[in-house]
Image 1: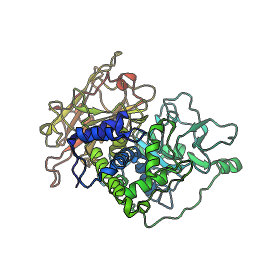
Image 2 (image 1 turned 30 degrees about the vertical axis):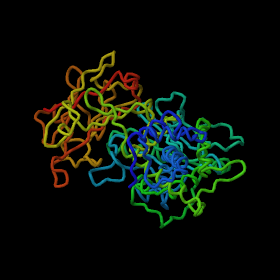
Image 3 (image 1 turned 60 degrees about the vertical axis):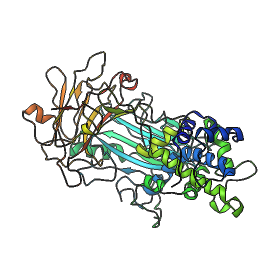
Length: 534
């Protein structure tokens, strides 16, 4: 593999965040390139022709910039390659929705990493290139939290994603409109939601108590009436619409995780896919600075020349530029494979507060697309990822099923301080869930629970169970593989995994979800208590 000096890698990574010379819209001057090469100790990837340095730098910038779009494209390709929306969990044909009827159960469920046992999902991909879609949202009880998360092709979450938090959201028909639509829309709509791309991904979450009756109510009363209809069909038939049966492409790999398929692409496959995606998902206005780079590489066209990216466009005389692009992709992969360590809270949790709406922070956007594609905006949901106990954040203090732990949430106060029960607003809620280290649910004994939840001050029923707070309003969550003693402790038991040959210490993950979080969470004033050895 070509070598890359740490200095050059740092320069490229920093440039992709702040827009310095490495991805400047204009061609780098020779003095600029000399300065970069000098700062890198005179080292560039071996095999790079000196005359192709600009192509190499452009390629690195384009790879990081385009990674989320290609990731969304591959996810859409895999997720929509089914004939029926109920054929496979989480998948539905284009412009249709998969609607969950039940919550996932046990470690055998592997379709989604860190699956939720507190919310049911309705998901699907939309293509708005031909015309808008009309999405009917039924009436939903004010006591039930929901969010219809809508992501564009760059993984930005629409600020107008319907949900409990937006008081302006009412039941009715919403028009989802792509960037090229100029015609009128029918009257009587509940709202119009515009997107910068024609590719849109819906991930709807709805709180469920976990009882059979409540899961049926979510499916029948909320998911079934949730219908996406092409505008032309809506004008003629309203929501009385039967989607067409679409062919399935047997050549599409429906087994390999989409992100792994993206990461296996060479420059020809990656930039070819990116170029095809950008024909219907053009750069946004705020991306003007990177447009000349994409034009130089042929990923997008100019006024005089349409985009026609293909490695076949390189001749023997320009072969060095194709090599430069291949080296650029290797560099981009290395940058994304080694993201900077995320700062932990004082209690050793990882809590992300800067995802879901990225602006021109292309490197952050690419990292989230690689490791947590589909992240919400913090105003709607904040997540805490726990791998370590409260004592330390190194390998000696990873969470193991061979140990016992307790997480003590202090009683909530008006000041909404750190270590208290998470403050959430409205009908929002928070939950803490146990997972195997591979992100699957732990196979529990039936006396314990995968998740516990509250609505800030009051317990919320999830998995057909209420947690048991202490008399002062605080809450102790017991995390261990064997039943804790006492009815109170047993009520709040998250059962950790038993050792196996593949996981001899039974390492596990605690995952904290906070929906409709209070400002004390989103501004960092609040953070979760540590996982204390017990």
